[in-house]
Length: 313
Length: 313
Picture 1 (spheres, chains in turn cyan, green):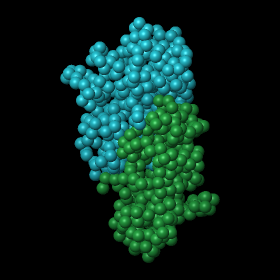
Picture 2 (tube, rainbow over the protein chains, first blue to last red):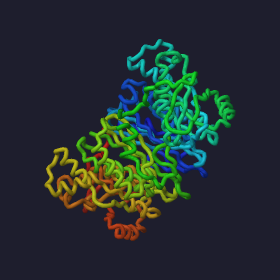
Picture 3 (cartoon, helix red, strand yellow):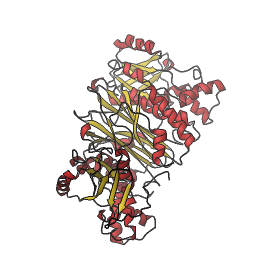
Picture 4 (cartoon, rainbow over the protein chains, first blue to last red):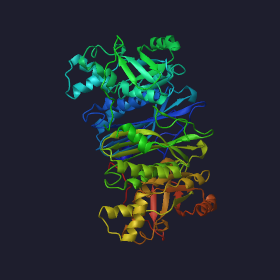
């Protein structure tokens, strides 16, 4: 199978949303009037982001999901993606399953795969994703204000719990592992939430490196601090009460949204939660100053020695 | 040095052409009125596309250059790029030189680096590049017509000659090697040529996998054939007359443009060559039918058993 056969067979689908899709020197895309283009790139490396024996269908899903999550955090409508892939050899069964997982999620979100690159090398998956958003409505990291509520969607920490099990650091029961592994391997990007938060959230980020690390980016860009109530953190029954409950603060791979909104918008946020059937939990407050304090229900600071995931630490 | 320090230090420059650049979940880009976005992705893998001891400055140049070449072949104005990079460890001197080479070329072409990803893994460099072009003026691969001239810019084959030397297959003299190695390591994307050809060329592609392979894509997409005159191929003094002269047909990494234009536009093409100080050579003609015939000056077909570079053959 040649490189071009491979592209044709596994990575070429109709691209109804593009002026010109796969097969030329560049794809041509028409951005809708009144919108700017939101662009993000995530690279997944075998051995760093996933295990060599990862299920290729789930890996195809996750490769796109982590990119969609960035658009969700921006309040952008996903439209197009490119996929560059380095593989050690052309294993057809693997490619078949990988592309099936990728396209299944792409179809759910109306994303056209418009281009990419296919080459030989250590397994590496690099997606660039393109969405649309009116410039003034984009959910940026720099808009948080003292007094704003801090919210988080869904539940935190389960993906990290599954990873801890897979790395042999803890031992989960079968049912626990199944539930947590689904969070790790098949995250659901909160695209609908991002869109609903346009005009309501003052800032947003997706939780990929751990809540404290990611919230930290909002605080830094917005020049504010935060107070978090540890017991308010939304955690699953699997995580609650465990010694590892701090994974809700420092675990990565959650792909939930963390966002801030003025206290006056609290009812609207709760209405969005009900409409989407997605829990949205108020976990604390933006304050003047710098840094993030985590406290218990009695207001006593908890010493949290955790750091977000950093590839170079 | 943390991942974020690394991004700040080596990969964050001003992005005057972006609504929002590095540092949020996504960059925000405003496409100029009347234009569509041209998007292309190229991934360079250590050991596949470059030697592990490649000069990082030149590698930074080439990583961007091969992507700019795709925009050139589309007749698009380069505007923005994202860079995803996997590196085995944070070698500051290497990153310093790599980013210097990347940004030097980016600045020449007015390209803003608006985002990316930095992670640990086997050395892999993935750029997605964004340009602008009015949809109707894009130089596509599917517009060649029987009777059109076939043109190529610059000279072909030198990069492949340098590679043959580096792989120990041939032995070049010192001066020859220096000249050819520059073509291999520091290609000059023909962006100005692509822009000048808007409204004149009927199709275009950049020569990255070898002339015959790349012209083959035009023929396939345009449903036409071609006749090429071997002795008309523009080759350097280094390559002319050598046994390896067929590298002009099958060697990769030239990053020249191959394009077609109606015979009636011949004078305009020559004027562009003069204006740009870049040789443009008519190497043959588009014909009805399929396939590409290469013939000598007497019109006798030359049997060319060559294939373009294919990562999976």
